[in-house]
Image 1 (cartoon, rainbow, N blue to C red):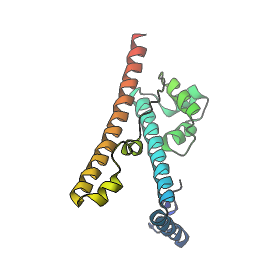
Image 2 (image 1 turned 135 degrees about the vertical axis):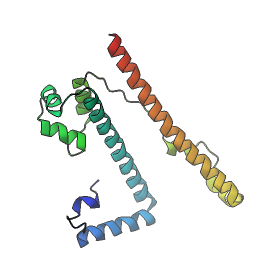
Image 3 (image 1 turned 180 degrees about the vertical axis):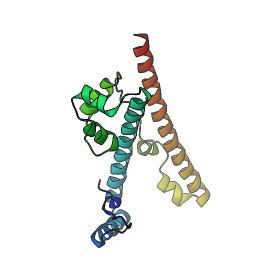
Length: 173
């Protein structure tokens, strides 16, 4: 997803066309739930990719390996490795695997229920909102928020545990 800030000049001013597109996106988000959902999914994917890129960079630096060294191991230039880490280059699953392997790691993918799917486990919140007071609606909202946070924590914990297990297995082997 192209971000408006990518088209901001040195004075911090966006061209009118970019401003118009941003306004149109805002109107679409507010008026079309499917558009808002698609944008939320795209933002989630961007966040996920950014996290993976940061983790690769952090692990490379922890091993005191330079981008040029990783590039040699991957058959890429230092510039290409930099682009992978900064989000300007391709990060396919194959690239992720090869990059991790170049650092002596093996990536592990863990799938957990999303916060959205967890919401469906709760009683129909729309029915509660109309049937009960605003306090009940607030309580349901708080439950949904708690489920989202637990899902995020579980994802982070599982990813960390898998990574630690792989590192221990590599160290023992």
